[in-house]
Structures are given as C-alpha cells and as structure tokens.
Amino acid sequence: AIERTLSIIKPNAVAKNVIGQILSRFETADLRIVAARMLHMSREQASAFYAVHQGKPFFDELVEFMSSGPVLVTVLEGEDAVAKNREIMGATNPANAAPGTIRADFADSLTENAVHGSDSSETAAVEIAFFFPEGVCPRTR
Ligand code: CMP
Image 1 (cartoon, rainbow, N blue to C red):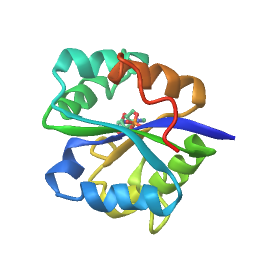
Image 2 (cartoon, rainbow, N blue to C red; image 1 turned 135 degrees about the vertical axis):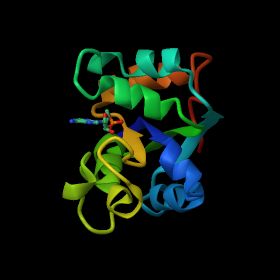
Image 3 (cartoon, protein in one colour; image 1 turned 135 degrees about the horizontal axis):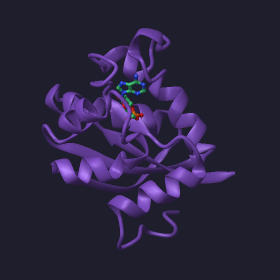
C-alpha cells in the first residue's frame, strides 16, 4: 500500500554536501518527497524526538550529534515507503550496511550514520507529527 515515512538527513551528511545525492536515491526508488523542512535542532528537540532511547548508553552522544548542525527532515511517500526507505538506508551500523546503501556510502560511524528513517508506519505517524504539527499535504498527485 502507499504509505509515508519520516526521513532525516543527519548533520554529518548535510556537512558533506550530499543532500541532493541522498534525495535522488529516494526518487530513484519511486519515493516522493511530500514535505521538507531544514532545521538545527536544540538538545531539547533532539531529546524529545529520540525519547524512546532515553536511558540507553548512546543517548547523550546521539542527542549531542543530532543537535550539532542542521538536518533536512522530509516525508517520503510511496509503495511500502517504510520498508523501502530502510532498504535504501542500509543497516543502522554502517559496518553492516550493504554496498550501495546510503549508510554504506555516507555514514561515518554508528552515531553519525547519515540518515534516520521511521521503523514502522505507526512510528512514522508520530515522527511526522513531531516535525510537521501543522500537517502535510494529504495528496500530491
Ligand atoms: P537512528 O535510526 O537515527 O535511531 C537511533 C540512533 O542512535 C541510530 O540511528 C544510531 O545513529 C544511534 N546509535 C548510536 N549507538 C547505537 C546503538 N548501539 N544501537 C542503536 N543505535 C545507536
């Protein structure tokens, strides 16, 4: 089914000037960009976004990194968008990411792994509402 997922191009990928290359990969896979927002998150925003990871050993480093520079947040739409995006991103740990995936090509470490993508359509709805509380265009075609 056609669904939506949230993607974040993380500060290390923005710093590398590869936003366009990453967006191209989404489009090549038939995912459409239906909303976009560039912002520099505060520590508070990053903590709130990753609240599910509070208490984990990597939480502080994650929050510090995600608030270290601008990110590009997009909503991607397409057939099986959540799973498709996860496939294009590659494994969370770039050491395990398949060749040709975004993380294999642009990640610097487990924390600085270039992109975030929602892990389910339920999570996607929550994450989309976090960054786009005013809502997103209901239809784009
Ligand atoms: P992301 O998909 O954005 O979700 C949480 C992030 O925490 C993850 O990608 C990684 O960048 C980061 N992270 C750092 N250490 C770990 C770890 N040990 N396990 C999972 N995620 C980690």
